[in-house]
Image 1: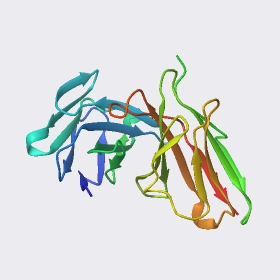
Image 2 (image 1 turned 90 degrees about the horizontal axis):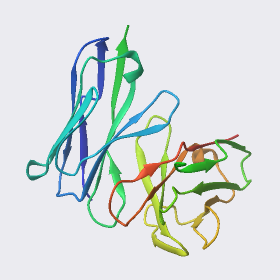
Image 3 (image 1 turned 180 degrees about the vertical axis):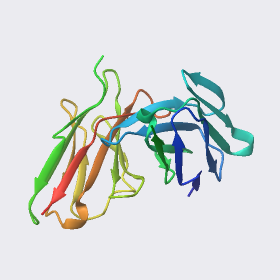
Image 4 (image 1 turned 60 degrees about the horizontal axis):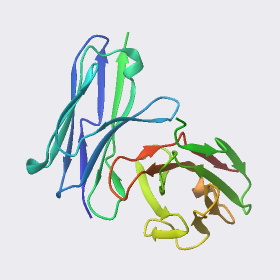
Length: 108
Length: 113
């Protein structure tokens, strides 16, 4: 099956800093999504981005499907950005395959 | 526009009991997925259903686990004779079509004592 690798596994930032999270995948995909799992365990949809670039406030994402990677940018980080960020891809058959996540901690 | 709803949010069961987890998809969505998140791990696919049909159950344990999505009412994930290893967060997601963005519910946290 498809392999999804996220880096870095852990990231600690000071409030106001910028960061880039990476997701590499081993095969072509139909769908790629980024999620934020907050400290209460809820999964928040950030982006549906099988290709191209999207922006939503301080967050943006870019997927380069031909090179099999996606990047999530967080600018001017806030303590509420803390949590785990997951990348998930769909190849065929509709199921999402998740990466192991990046644990982000933003300190005040 | 209500999102994906799951209940209960927390469920405690003793070993050997049955657990029933419910999921109501977003309005207009007819595709439902169940995922499991074991402690300190990522999410793993379990089963994909459409109304009255199981499309893909390849991620679901062969024994004790079953899922349904009836014509009327929510999707149900049923775990019989629970064991401590079943303790996890169970997430339901829905989508409008067979491909496209999946939206997740808040999850049901199952604890087996």
